[in-house]
Image 1: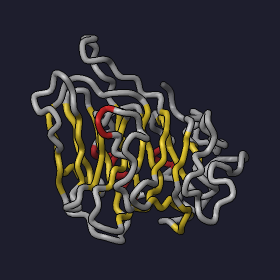
Image 2: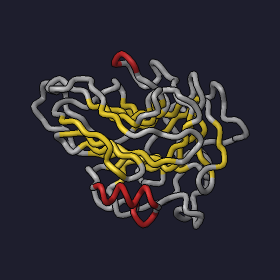
Image 3: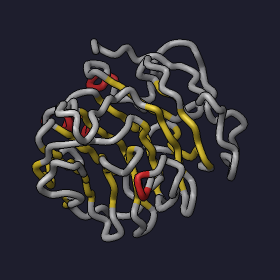
Amino acid sequence: MGRAELTRRRVLSAGGLATAGGLAGCTDILGGSDSGGPDETGTVSEGVLSSLPLDVLLTFDDGIEDVSGNDRPVSVEGGELVEGRSGQALRLRPPDEYFTVQSGLESPGFDSGDEAEPFSYAAWVQIHSAHRHELFTNEGSRRRLAINSDRQVCGRMWGGRSDIEGSPACGAQVPLEEWVHVGFVFTGTEGRVYYNGDEIARNPWRGYTGSAKTCSGSRAAGGGDCEAAPGEVDATIDEWAIIRTDVSQSTMRELASA
């Protein structure tokens, strides 16, 4: 995939917006302007992100918008738009508020013999309690980035050929009510966890990565779909990105300092 052009696009899921719980104060959470790119408030780290092969980039100034240029379908359960780092962000509360994105990531099956493609996750988050905050969870729970109930940032890759099947890699201690940058990088052979631009944990991995559907605020327990076991997030989220490559630590530091 070539360089992604950052453009504002109106994003709707095939089934429309999930309405249970609503979005307080928002009449059109998936709406927004169709004109121009990111504004000048600094809500998107244009200089860094525009040079990366983006799969999804969600911003929240005019509702939930995928500005990657890929028109990825988004659905939302609950949530509220609030003041963010610079502009608006999405506040998700327990027990059952989350959003789901159908990304374009492809994954091999257990016995295909194919290697999974590298990818990265990154987001700005602010946690409000000692919950388990599921920030990225793919369908089937096989790749995750979470802040656990001990307020540690954890990445998990699980697969049929893994030597560390199901074991998360965790590090750092996240303060409450402060904006922090978190990231996860899968290189094809290992997962690396980042906090404020620094690598804090890693583990080796080879195998299966599950499907393309990706959630925030949903545990997707038991191999079900993203809506199977929603909940366990009490956080505000901004600049939520899926990148179709394994970004370097210097790039993650740039994203965390923007």
